[in-house]
View 1 (tube, rainbow, N blue to C red):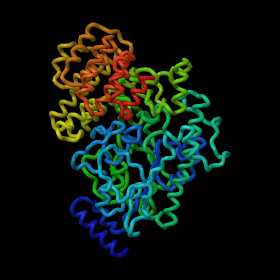
View 2 (tube, rainbow, N blue to C red):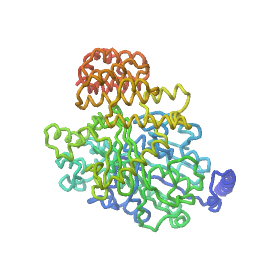
View 3 (cartoon, rainbow, N blue to C red):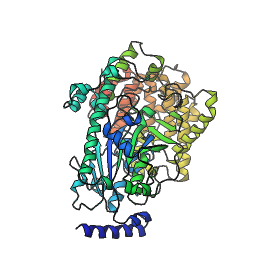
View 4 (spheres, one colour):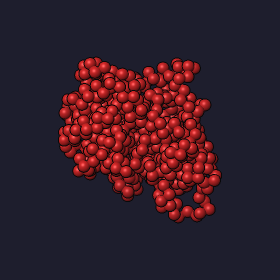
Length: 626
């Protein structure tokens, strides 16, 4: 059987090469293509000994780094799992697919494939154990030979068949940092090996209290357990005699599960460990560095899929945002920038874009009226978040710590060389004006070129997709699409800056997304304490008569803030009637009610109670009803 497989593999590889799907180097390698093992974990920043983390107990991953290459500047495209995994599995920015909301089920454009599908076609046995969470609609039977808690490379029928095997280690997840989750993970450990909270060094971002120290100590314990499980997976290769035939890649899906880390797109939320061990027989061919080397280039987790394809000798599809780091198809140069995006997270909306160079990070807050630390139900269970809230209410936070509880600036700029925790916004520093202009321009270029379809409010994005019969990612195609996107981006930036607009100019806008953004900019300023002017009320009343429900809903929020609660309630009832069973729009109504003050909820409580049933709707209802 093994001999038959070798012949079949050569025939398949040759055919794929002739069709342009496999690189010439794959044919040169013939039947000796490498196995590839992914060990991914959840929710950790580079808190390993090999990255210099003090007190880290990670001997197995430190050993892997000593035998491979460690990337010092690796970043995810989002600070939360599902959109980050969208980017990894498609090698595309989720904002270009309309899949950057947490969570979504987005249809992909024709021709956009999940990269393991290409590996399977090239003869690889592909397994996933077991988390998917890709945020897109796809039949997993097309993607994986097996995807389950029992999926394993050992399950392939022919031991000569090359494999791509993924193991997702979940014991470091945010929920395991909670005391009850932590106890389940460390139950088998001796008490003497657990990290003491007294030994923890708390970053200046966080309040230095016993509860916060406890979170960092528990996280260190979870990482130690994860290291042991990663070691077990490495031992399986050794025992099977496959360590010299298998390229191993270790990474985390985003930064650690603490506040202003997970869900955010600062370094604390998107900088991740990335280690790759290439066996000696493949090292020169793969272009890997010497064992124990460090690579300082900027890389993105979007590069993982193309890297695997390159190492397997499979051609890289056009149009990907990711680029191969290793293998015959590897990119010769590094990136100048990596990009990140944050949109709706569970029940709370936001819209943030970021560009990171080697030294600086630029952040674009298109909804700056929200504080960085919005109240997201799931994240509020974290001990550090509870402590942050408690100290904030008591007025006991430092200026640096308290700023994350207040509305943000429309733009942020950080010098990571001087300020690695991104605490001091340098956007007004004249010495960095050139840096600001460069990164601001790069953010414009990136959003327009992707294109950033998530500049549309989520309900409108879904409705336009359904109406046009197109996936979200194709709504801004062609020159007309680009021109429209430019207009929407300008409107969003004007709203973020708080620019005024007259009723006449607003009413002349033909694009519903532009009208929505400009109205959002008005009423959200009211929610942050801006004075209620006659011009603002006139604009909100005009919005109440708009033909589109998302615009009317925005007007309702502002009118409630301006004291016209009954009119706002009538608008919301009308939008709920239009929404019917559309959960996105129903939840948007509940969000506006929750964020516009208690008077509107009181007026609508009975109407909203009968709408309950969706997870995010219910969370917002409960928040308003406290």
